[in-house]
Image 1 (cartoon, rainbow, N blue to C red):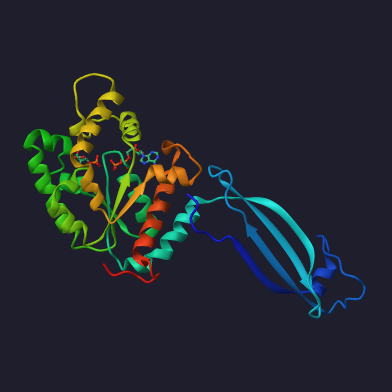
Image 2 (image 1 turned 90 degrees about the horizontal axis):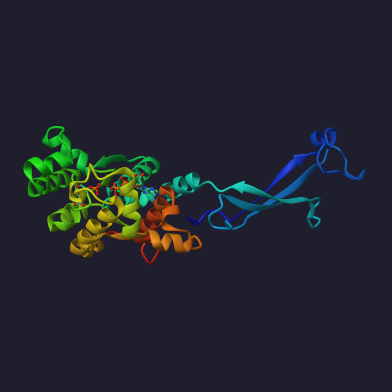
Length: 303
Ligand SMILES: Nc1ncnc2c1ncn2[C@@H]1O[C@H](COP(=O)(O)OP(=O)(O)O)[C@@H](O)[C@H]1O
Ligand SMILES: O=C(O)C1=C[C@@H](OP(=O)(O)O)[C@@H](O)[C@H](O)C1
């Protein structure tokens, strides 16, 4: 995901000819006119070209070194192009530090269907922001007594689970500096939105086909709403996810920001959604939060 990163760099510095004169191993040579005791002002400029093709992990960098003497026009003494590794880890870290002051410690709540990446992307966001990570489902399991979500559904039913989920969100809403991965169904109860709106909510919007592929790859044992009798895992999962989304899809739109995997893929030059890395999604989420908090007038929005 091409974040708004540094595209050019320029700085000047002084070099001591005496030091360079003794080891002109580079391409810099000085005419006899220079007295060795002179200092020379050198200008370094680097242009970072946009990442092309988007899927590549290298950026082309053109570098130019020029020098001027006694305020005479600078003349280029060295230039070249090279490819620098495009480090999405650096991008997401830089972006997180840019927006952290605007967050003012507010929690980030990730909402989305099962398999949308709430846990995976949430852990990346918590890491780069220096926030703690909380998984709402895990808190419910701990509260009930180290019983799995699937067992809770089986032993006590979904309503019991939803009550525990709401209690967990109420407790989380009293805290700060958390990234919270919510359960896929947390959006259904309005009271849950009252708690999540104490922070910033992000909807990870991923196509159902991708969700079904991801979940089919890991199995549905931990997701009781996707349990079914024998059959083709992908197709059954896709059918059940489609029915769930039909019921609750509109509720996700209550989130403060929507991170669409399809839009990220399009921005990156029509990459397939399944090719997007969790970090690509995390960068987009941070950019969306930045847009929300800075608002149209570029100031920090209070909301
Ligand atoms: N952007 C991504 N690219 C590839 N795989 C992903 C991505 N996001 C999540 N996954 C994988 O999909 C599965 C579900 O992700 P998870 O974070 O557990 O989703 P959720 O918490 O929303 O249910 C995991 O196996 C995870 O590794
Ligand atoms: O969509 C849902 O209703 C659910 C999603 C699950 O969380 P994940 O989204 O982490 O799978 C978990 O809360 C429970 O199985 C119910």
